[in-house]
Image (cartoon, rainbow, N blue to C red):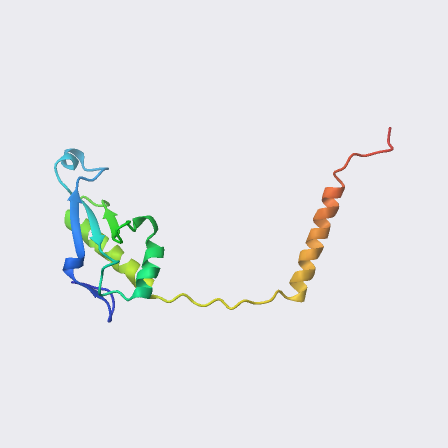
Length: 140
């Protein structure tokens, strides 16, 4: 059971963990022990997530979202399998928690008169600089 917030809890059957050998430091141990973890959460089929949260989670996940609608999180930071498992679960919880936040609606604003004038002045100055780059005539 993975508790995200008061409304959302993820059941154990929705999560599958697969352990594999990690790359990186570990000496001779690295070739023997499967310490890296791949946490797979079937987000698309999950009854515990509301549809808007699923949509936001899909956008936040990016490449970690599979074609089947699963969210895949990999972790091989430490040499401890239990710690990697804990880190992967924490990352999943943080990602889902971020997806529960509704984005603020942007209120469009009009540019001020001062900002319009500054923009036009800068354009004029830039145009004058470029105009001065032409060939110089009448000196020879």
